[in-house]
Image (cartoon, rainbow, N blue to C red; front, top):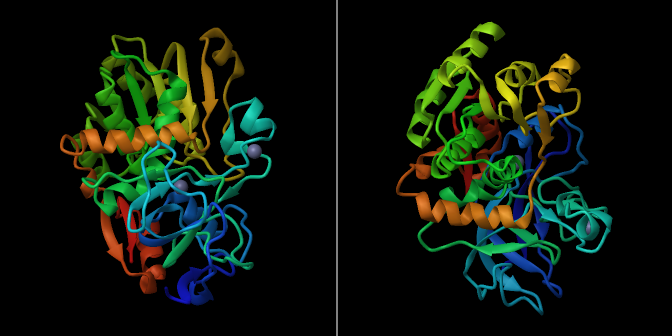
Length: 364
Ligand SMILES: [Zn+2]
Ligand SMILES: [Zn+2]
């Protein structure tokens, strides 16, 4: 086995990531050492890099990771779904490493809010075993992490965004208890919007309306089940509300999901709901994302707002199953539009930030 591995390390926000070499440690009980094959760049990696959300440093960013098992510590024999694990198997895993026994893990069913939570690509890499993020050659998967073996039919690039973008969307629709026949509004046609549209389609939703400000994204998402798309650049709120009502017999959307990551779209999203409608807020994952709204409208129209941050293990399981079941119906293999080697990480981050890509992947 190699003695060291490379990683792209952020020492300070807004500055280029630097390639460093760290020593590899032997796996301990319950650990898995993974050779990373692919890591996609998530919007929250960009927020951290741009300094719009706080982060410890030095840090190895990247959490939409997948890779193959290089070594397994004592006690590791199966994944979280009961499938046998062996050296060379490709796996994905939950973004969080949680304790499983605290107030949130055990009593409230919110493992993603564990009191002793660690998250891949979110914690300092200063101390051994260093490799706890995705922009690197290796990653140590710790015992509090739920691991899922990737089916042979799924490519590395199709599997990589499963453990953040896809699983988060699955958690969002699960929280909304989406019904067949629902009319849904998805604000944002990026990777989360794409998965949200495709999953809404498979759940039997009626209108799947998507808004964005980039035509190339709105065009692309129509291949993932979107029935109607609206470019909202410069559009007045009332005009969008009228458009949505026109598509829904005058009532408005049953459920709206915000995955644009823009606080200014929340108010119009709420206005587009029917009475009794639900708003799933997922995109504004940085502090200071303030919006203002007339509280009486929430009361008079019986609106519900749910915040969904990360997900539960079952959502990742369902997400991987979903990819396997529907990868021939929807072109998930085209979501990664740009690929870079680890050494070109800074160029990759710039392309991801430009908005011209759907998903950018680091391939190892
Ligand atoms: Zn993410
Ligand atoms: Zn816990």
